[in-house]
Image 1 (tube, rainbow, N blue to C red):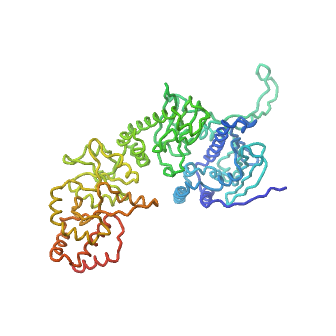
Image 2: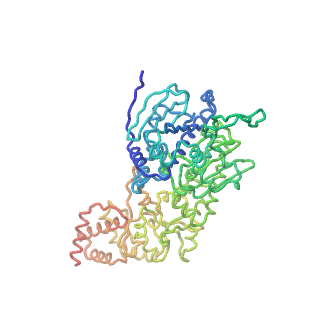
Image 3: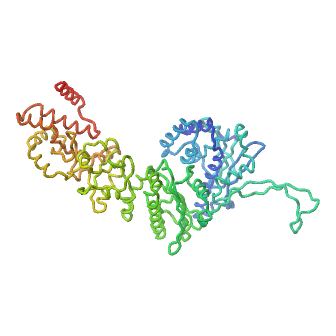
Length: 637
């Protein structure tokens, strides 16, 4: 009976990717082989992991390897493995779609590639779409795969034209064969069926793969005698031998002075699928009660899924060079999830589960030491390198301030902020304190999502008047930072938009007495909007602003919670008025002449609306605001 062939359409994002791949000039074609070998290595990792608890899953096929099969006559190239294999459903999920977690970021990068009229290597490696890179060199791809434990196999095939077919087929054992029908236009420049071309690519991109990458190689050999000496007059004969193309060296186990910078970078590319060179690396070897080796990298660019809940952690766990698990979250805290690398702990049980890892004293000790080493590395970076790091990972690092109490002090010294005086440059809290004015008692800060709006916020007018510097906190995580770091080197952190600034106490007391009756009246008109009206300790030029009491939720925090879909209890703000502003004096005179003057209600609402607009908010009644401003302009001109 002929197997039924089913045809499916690719996911939209895959279609866009394939269109770019097929129609673009690509200067790094050879990376397709790196990606296919990497996928095979992952499949071998999975079967190796399963075999730790179920040795029978391997059957008689226990020699795990990746085989490359070039066919010069038919111009095909096959990458074959005896890994975990895929079921029919897994084939559809893995070869027809891109993981939903990366779709938005992927499309953004895709658009960038369109504008640049080419396909960036980062797009291939970073978004887990390496399989599709094979269409750079192939007119058609056929995948034959059989999942471990399954009797039937699945055949997937596509010409990269927007659709693919799936049908049942036969395969002698588990694993996956990826068969590329090489494109004639590519063959004119590079022949990927040539032995030395394949050797060069494997050596360059996949030398560190921990499984043998093998290929059958033909050699002419002369017959030899029992002593291994050539037999005189005997004809040479052609023999085929399977040769291993990669060294499979565990680079982390080598001595530091035996490893070149190029090898460090190549290994980073291998484990991270990131084409960019890393920012820095740490090769750590600890001996004693706790023994382990670690090779860790800090990427130069943040991965696209850094803030996704289902993100992957980049540290692999080994024991005596035997792979235990990928994505080992237990080795590093969440705020260091951007770290890539390997940790090899020889005393770790090979069959340890993730649940046991959380309780394992050795793992906890390794984690503590790794965090210490990483923070030391960050502390010792030169200014330019650290600035590059902080631009990419500063917001994530700040998560540790409220989640890692043991290292809070060190992390507090590592965080940076732009300020009202830094002209766009990062400043540490230590720099801030060193430059404080002699009469300044607090470290002032303001939170928000718009740097320009914060710099020009009316809340900062009094502080700027005294030439006090203010930290500009633009990351959502900063709202949690200020609850954990309440002081630095004896100086308390104080919000510039909540509570009193306490810099002109006597003057504020006199103003309260002078304007008390007027403020009571304004409060009556705005009773449903504000909880109090008072003279401002913040303003110098503006007429009004909204603030909160010291322990109130900030306007930015309220905005963040609402944006995340959380229900936020309605809270009233404090309306602060600048008693030095001529407008307030004129309104006070109107009030003294007649406390029931109808214009007082209009002016009260206008003052409130101006305060809302000043902090970037939306006013409740734009039509009334428009009319009042128009009337005032007409009477003034």
